[in-house]
Image (tube, rainbow, N blue to C red):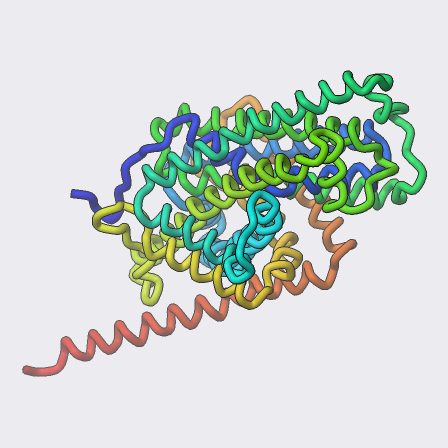
Length: 457
């Protein structure tokens, strides 16, 4: 008989690593390198920014590995923040993740997939309008009806990305060698910036921010740590191995892009994808790249739809343990048959559909980036608050590197987008009155129950 505090640990190394790579390798890999290359104007700078952010990401992954191994339960950042900084800070993160940011990300990715689905096959106009909602509902259903099923689909999609993208790099190399031109002529001179590049400091700042969020999602494995078999062995491999795989693919694919399409010819992200596909596959380029994009995006969406409900579930269970669950209690239950946080899955799917209907996902993403960086930094900072000291070869250097890098990124975001960043912070802080209302409602309900018990019979 399955209890509400237990789920079967069904995820091995392949599945856990797929979670790390899944959201990182998504739509951004086809769009971000083009923007970065055009802005930086130099292959050497492009590689340096990718490698710099990879070092920062690996430092964060080492920290999250330690946190996940110490807390091998569902919930990720919520659980770590709860134990490091208390219930209020953790609730703010859970509020942002479950109700604002991640539903916005899911809605944005589902909409971004539609043009590529249309390039693969014709769709009736009325179906096209419903495709984003159908994607969200389909993924929600997979995660509602069983962890084993959703894990299998997620793992397959996200590991399929690796050979697909490596094949894309290999074919680009073959096309370059067959073209008759000097190999990699578009990369030379490798360290000289092209005409029309953006001012250096602004270009590096913008590229660093883009690269950081192109890597984004590597931390999701912590959210499903309660599903991982042998977490002490599996999670370190998943975090570090996943980040290294993402880094290798990003570097290879970025240089393949620039080697095929000269930086001077890059105009927009969409035009670049078309240029790259045309150069490699001729008239079939749009179809081939569209298939690659759809595989990558659906894999990322699967990770989101699996991981985020675990945050809601952990938050609700934590509140219940303290006798404060109230209206959240319904989200802290596992399905009696499927063993999934079914109500939390419904909440995540419903929130994404609402945001999709309102068309607010682009603003939400712009507003939440700053707050997301702050919460990541706070999460890593909890390593300095643990009762049992961290005794790893990389401590305290890794958390210091990550905190310094995150702080620099936060300052860049405030400088480049001060209004959206501050508005996003205000949305996060709006979770405080929401929490107060939930606690007040729970207190009133408890008083009524107590009074009812004391009424003479």
